[in-house]
Amino acid sequence: MIVSKFREDLPAVSAVSAVVPPNSSAGQVMSVKFPQEVVMKFCYCPAGSFTMGSPPDEQGRGMRENQVQVKLSKGFWMAQTECTQAQWVAVMGDNPSGFIGDNLPVEKVSWNDVRKFITKLNDAKTLPAGWKAALPSEAQWEYACRAGTKTAFSFGDTLDVKQANIGNALGQTSAVASYPANAWGLYDMHGNVWEWCVDWHDQYPSGARTDPIGPDNGSHRVNRGGAWDDGSTTCRSDMRDRGAPDARHSSMGFRLVLTARP
Image (cartoon, rainbow, N blue to C red; front, side, top):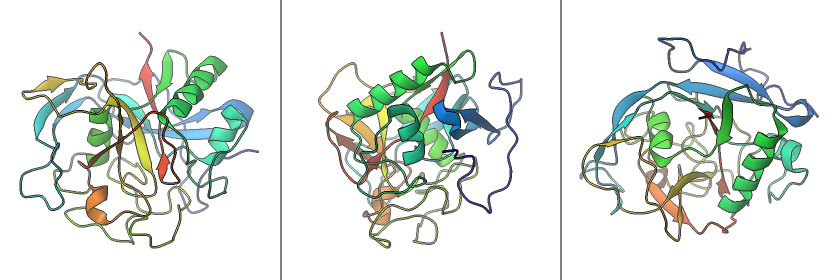
């Protein structure tokens, strides 16, 4: 099984080197082969700073969304879409999902399940030399989702069913890349499935932070982005949710980042 693109009408994209040249722009795309010749595409997110969290007057604002200034000192590659079932099967050999389809996002995967996937993928040695797969930090995720915007969503201050799979409009997940991408070429950052982050969930610390990764321990891991059965305010760029590391749901998936090996 070869999955080289997600929709027939998406433009062809040339692979670029994972060794990022100086002054690289956001949104450059790299195609990476997984086991069994399955492909995952990644978009480049350059180093930069942003305001993480929501302003006090944002509709749907949660209790743990206090704003904090964040600097990300290194660029990273984020998967263009949520991990698909074809990509999961290529690495793990099974499919835990409730809604079945090669290009649907894999779901019913726990944070612990995803860590096993990442370990197997890194051990397979099919990724570009010098880079490794990981879950994004919560700061990386929001930075990439915003793609330079300061509004509640990457598309502005409102979100509808033409822009994302939300509000139970379809009654299930949709094929990845079925809705418009944000300014950095990333699809489905709002809705479709919640996405696990590496961080333990807690209140943001006060003061400016550089490359934050959350507390050292906790009971729940962060998930971001909302899902197919959530209303729009639950799918905001700064919306935070959490789940036990062993929790599995039909609205829970993930996307990868590639980071430089130390």
